Image 1 (tube, one colour):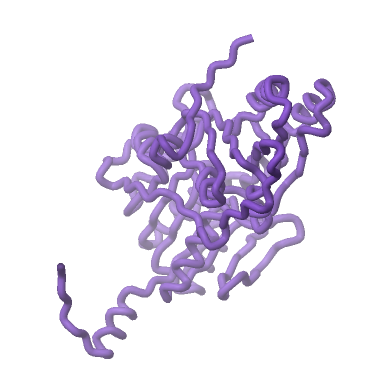
Image 2 (cartoon, rainbow, N blue to C red):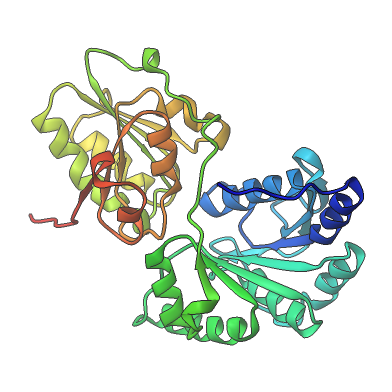
Length: 343
């Protein structure tokens, strides 16, 4: 049991004013693009706004969306005139973005710069320029990367250079922390683990939406190699062959969608595999509640927010045992599978 001394209204206001910050969130990945990083930045910004802090987001232009936009609760977003050239990343220029970053930092009176995602070139440039100007910087890593391939070697060198002078680093799982420490050379005591979370008020179960005469397996993911889309191509026909009362709902889009469409036609599964395409985040709950089981087939995953969303909606979650997935729940709440494909 603990007690606290009463504080006067003047001291409370002084404490509140001392704790208020002006935070600049920087990443190449933000709305209208959909994904875990985009949702994380948005909801983190909303939580900081509710605590009385000022939050500004900086990202690159998306099509005709360029300039300053305002989102819920006055969240200010700068869509800077830089177009992506690879996987939603802008072309690295090092000093090409310095004038606009400096302008935003001074105009908004920023006190803390928070960069997201190691693969974001805009994030790295903002952290570098902010430290040069004497600002406090924080970096959050959302993914796992390798060590041997050419792209990972290059990215790890950039990470070591950029994070050499950051104040704090955040990872979304202990596996992600170990990966980031090894890649960046940061001391472990400067890297903190803060797992992702979901708003359970947005993801409530609805048993009446589920069919009673069949089992529906839901898959919501970007249809790319890293998310295990090729694994789905092999698994779905086999499950449909073994169980006649199973149906699949596949939500998401990406370059691997063509393979799933071909698989569906090859095995005549048009009636049992429904392709939903890209699902806006506001409609994810309405898709999840239609199923009984959520399937995550990722080949690498630092922390899967989709598993939390599915569990919050009352689905049994089945996932590959990769990355930080085993940390998300106790084993009685999920089933993890080792990836072993044999012809």
